[in-house]
Length: 113
Image 1 (cartoon, rainbow, N blue to C red):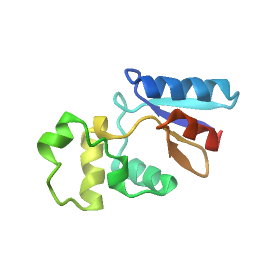
Image 2 (image 1 turned 60 degrees about the horizontal axis):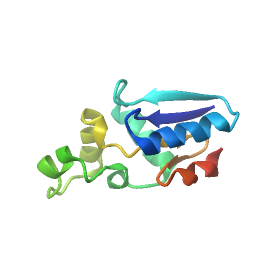
Image 3 (image 1 turned 180 degrees about the vertical axis):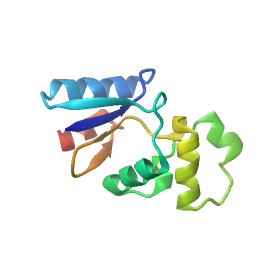
Image 4 (image 1 turned 90 degrees about the vertical axis):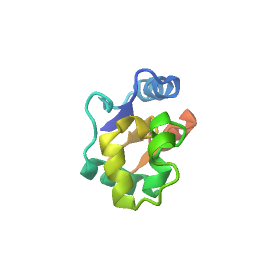
């Protein structure tokens, strides 16, 4: 089963969702702004992505620039910040049983479909 962490207002996320739909595979959509991820879910996703937490952060978001940009934050702190502020999570993220990818550019989604 494919899961796409989706933001309906994001063009790249909508493109990613179309790719997942067109793959013919079973999938589910998680609108993570409506149903935020827990710290545990974010940690598991980061592990599947094989990245550090800072790489999942959208650094151009106003909330990041105003509150966190110049702070020296630990991985745990970054995960907690993303759990409290889901808008800071890169989008879309698509995962299968084994791995996950950030769909920027959307063509990276093909790696796991």
